[in-house]
Image 1 (cartoon, rainbow over the protein chains, first blue to last red):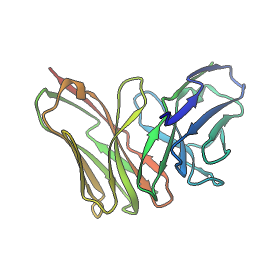
Image 2: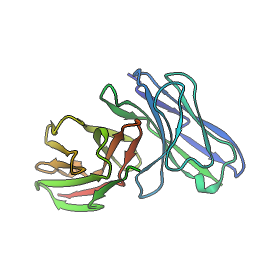
Image 3: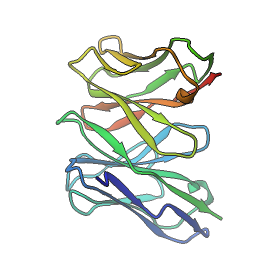
Length: 113
Length: 111
């Protein structure tokens, strides 16, 4: 079982460049999430999608956009990368209504120079 | 706005001790609470999930409790081992399916 798959695993961007982080889950979960984790800190929610067709802002949405492409896929886009966006990004999926655990991808380590 | 707090931020104990990690949340309208483990440089691994209607869950040496009315959860680790050293995070899923994390407790179990 693949679970939650994120691509890429590592990325270096120059300031001002754009990129899209991809996330796919194969557990038929309704909800998907994007987080960032900075050194020594917990996870901060960027955006989430409670169900297919909906997206909502989390705690730190500025500088990011998301697309819930279908039930399986949820992408995160940085339109104009800034050094402050250097972080490790995690995607997760879960289903509160069904009472299932949330599962996480292995993360994308992004450096903006 | 839901806020999740974990105390202590760091904990160092000798091997074999029983220990308790604490998690508190400000809004009791939650679907569930989940405890995760994160090893350095790695992703998150789910340890235990407690539904809002449950009081506790157990898995091996781990026991998690939930008191929704007081906005508290504890993770009890029995007979700690050096392999338990990691960061432990709790997260609550609120009524809008938002999953909010605490900042974690960094645990070191000394041989």
